[in-house]
Image (cartoon, rainbow, N blue to C red; front, side, top):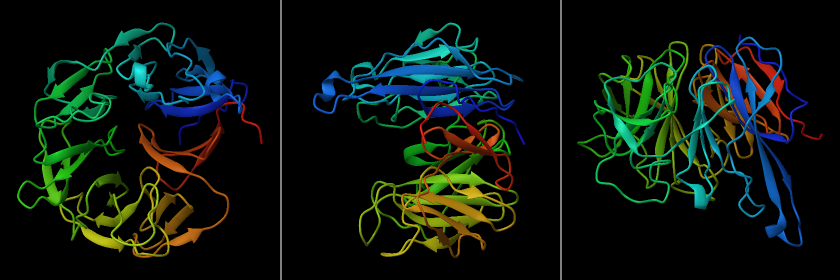
Length: 355
């Protein structure tokens, strides 16, 4: 289990936290001053905190980000690309093509843009994935004829096309980082049926195989998020719900695979009432058939691989993501939990949030 120290002395609240495989990492923090009567007078001061490899304390690095106004809010994005290496994206409308890269733990920064810098045959260790037709390459929503996978390089923070595409069509949705078993997963559409499908590469993107989900719910505007556990793979089918009250971040179905993603079984279908009906981040596999799902109205657990869920009530917020050491859960404000296996968890705090 990686050990991450708390940084309660850091200014502001943590907006994003990311960790490399060696448990070093970066955090984006923001301290906002708001004027309720005149919101345009407000602003947010942004900070970059750095956890060096083996360090017992976080430190403040320099920040290349502009301080957004109170009406813009904080929307910067971050991809950790290895120890001491991170890519930042401004995210504000006027700066939507501005990005930055550091290879020395935030001591110096190099400006980057979203233009491609050639192509690569494979995905390097610690790299991240993006797409040609999606954010951040086309943040203004421009359509493109054919989507392609882009590799965000840990060497220089530049985007390069991956030469071998997965056998999918439509809008490609890649996992940002490799799964704990080293595989890369990308969702899209099956070329023949147009149904949701998932492609996997176990050789760093040199070759891909794809499989269709079990009886997917074909509704507009959806995607698939994959999580790999110990001997099991889960796929959450997201997008507009077929019935019931609309919700934010809707989830339509949960699919499970016992053979690494070659075949799938739909274990859960969202109903017009009851939970879960939404998904914040990714599913978290645990031991055996244990599964956890964070939703808009609390979180749900399953002991039978997603066939049934029990809702955990109470004022509980959580957003789960996949990072190099495993799963990271943001519990709102400054509190985080990290797990390498979905069973044992370590809590830490980043920022000086008030209780």
